[in-house]
Image 1 (cartoon, rainbow, N blue to C red):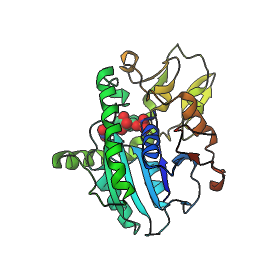
Image 2: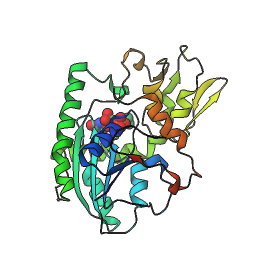
Image 3: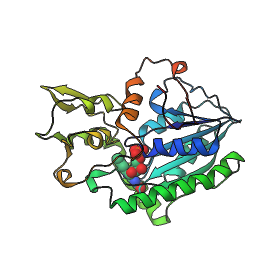
Length: 284
Ligand SMILES: Cc1cc2nc3c(=O)[nH]c(=O)nc-3n(C[C@H](O)[C@H](O)[C@H](O)COP(=O)(O)O)c2cc1C
């Protein structure tokens, strides 16, 4: 039975999780959420995985929109991987409730802890800790793939109660402000006007003005621009000049650029080239 793995990513952790799951599951295809334009979304697999980063203890807007566009078809097996940096909180509960409101059932939801890309709070941590997280996540995806293959139910994973209450409150407060949080981005004098930030932005939120990036206040806060800048010239607030950048070590700039390049509003959903799970790379 075929599995469709829809993913969203800023710095590659969720793309890597999708590739890893695809390899474990076999007969699976990975599809960037950015390429989905159809309403309802066309689904070809009997099972559907939704793989995304946790943002401010909850679902990114793009994932919410995707769930709203899922067909009201209850015959499929839905599962989610919430890729995070140690605080999944109530993200998967939020997803469970949202899916129920659409008449859909989230059969299983898993917390996948990976290195942090949230650079406003610091770097990704020591190399050893990052590699341990990636190793543990690999093991976990291996374990849960048998649950998915058997189409079993598994309660959605969540944080401790205090975190779920407090952080869900923070999420609700912050969520309306996410598009304008980009006012804290700026480019320092290392910027060589290469324009990669503009090309990699998943939502067309960056324009080049006098050869320097300008953020247009419809940001998704994926942090791709700051994390992938080859010159480390993009900053967020005052502290990031001294913080190390991060992207998943097995995901390349070209992988992420290829996703954004093909994402355009008038792209017909049927045109997306589904990629084979076997070799784990995106064929574009
Ligand atoms: C805006 C933003 C908010 C984040 N909030 C959380 C959070 O609430 N809990 C958490 O564990 N990680 C949080 N993170 C870290 C990411 O979820 C984590 O690093 C994830 O693996 C990144 O996945 P990606 O590389 O696919 O974008 C946040 C990252 C960003 C950019």
